Length: 552
Image (cartoon, rainbow, N blue to C red; front, side, top):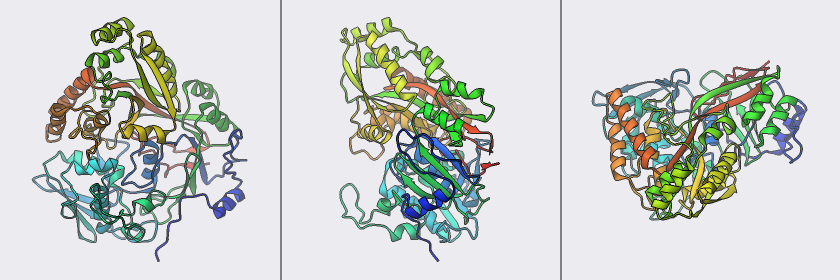
């Protein structure tokens, strides 16, 4: 019997059950205590997740959402977080690659089901690929780069039978690259029957020729997955609840539920953690981390992430489009001060777009604070008196602190920087529409391969406003046909050393001339109470799994 997954809202029944457990879902400002005590079967995390826009894996392209989706959906294969050079079976139990490296055939695990009770078949996998390509939302390019289009998707990604899925690519890519892409959130498998039941009819248009929304409207706030947890409830900027999926085909989660509380301030998280009101604090600043190190009831987990922080310059702004201005700005970041204070313990200075630990990473750091050099470059650009510009900033640390630091150093060279604060959703929406001057934020790798970052920082196949591929280079209107071609060529290089050399070359070109100022690579930190066991942070933002975590 098919189970209808409820709308993602805190329902009265859930509130009653929560209160019976000693829980209080009060999120009133000024009331930092959330729980009288946290139940043993429930993990409570404080975390800033105001960037969540949609829960549809075919549309979602936000850092916080990916962590949630990574715990509630399944993919054909998944990244081995203990050895990122390989992928492991998930829905697929095995796979083969043809001799010409064009056809990938996956055999699914038998007898597995979605949380709804519906069986997981190759038709569900094919449907998940088809809807991602035809909806053509932000993450669709991860699959589209294999030559998939709305016209050929049903032939290129198809079920051979109920237990066999076949995927055909357009070029003989390195198999590791293809498999790594299939670990991305856009490749998560959704319940075709459940999603189709809730699809809405729409009028075809020039933007989308299809007469259905492929369930996108419903799946923004509903769930249709098969992961170790069920996405039970979500209230934007308030609370998010996961519950154990007892139909999961793998080892069952040890916790009955995981509750994320939206709490942005580091000090508030620290106090709640020390008081035992929460189990895990996720957005701690350096000062609060130092304060917790002496607390014998608190342990700290850290993990270098495939996430880089940067700010970018929209080339639609004629001033920021001047090469000398771009270069001058790179000399107006006080990297030493930022490294010693704002990111101490939570990041490592890094000026190139491939994170350390990934194929092709380099550690070139040629730019340091040099106000005199910046002034000279601005004068050469015809701007000896500087200019005024805006920066869109998510109101979360350390981003706000870094923006304020940049504001001060810009002023030393005559540049007036106006900071425009907003929550994650507001800032991202504006950025994705190319309506910013300067944007500051983070980019987390979508899959563990250098192309994930290269394709977005050094590739822009179509700079038109209505382009289908909207990379970070596109968001900043940086038209780069030569770099786009070089980025594409790296995918066909089977020699690992030569491929790494190409990525090193690409990064140096972007570093010298691009509209991106890379700041640091994230070290993600989670402070937790010592009764929490097996809490781990993964190398990517969608591998912070909590299914093995438990409490004593």
